[in-house]
Length: 227
Image 1 (cartoon, rainbow, N blue to C red):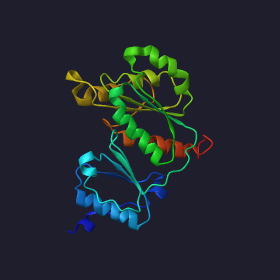
Image 2: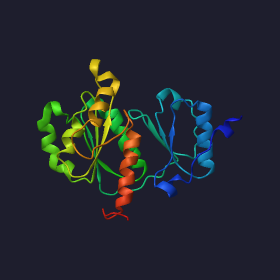
Image 3: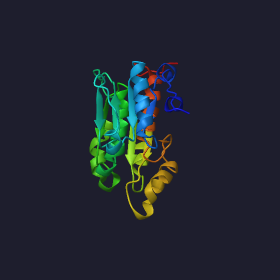
């Protein structure tokens, strides 16, 4: 089987779901990725690349006519993407600690790729609850709140009891010992007593952003249900 036959891109996904297909670069060879980029360009589309390491990024063959915007922290890239002015933020991305910034940035970049701005708030974990309370009213103004937290994974539960919007939890591997590479945070989020908290997989920032996009698409431009 040729490399071309290994690739079958879903160019109809934006029309069908309102969300573009993302290219997960982990476990793909540079040869496969170069074939994917070639097909994207040939179809006059753009692409969001996730989990793209610096080393693998240097092995891509990038056409001069296609813009490539790489963010090393989130390991994301926009290929052949045309930037547009973003509307006022309807999503707040709240990170418990600075150590959670990498996953938070994946959320932010995914939202930006789809034309959505967000309000990013960092380092407001429960160990210094006063920092969160100072930003509580600002966070509550957003219809969707994505909460990124590791360690004991407590922040999504706290915000789940404070803000009226949809709360999407993203546990991270931040921590050590009994944090168990994010397993403790994941279990805490799943066991949350706060009603209605949605939980994504460990460090699945892209998935959390897509959940937010589905909610916003259902709400429509005026913040009302599209149904």
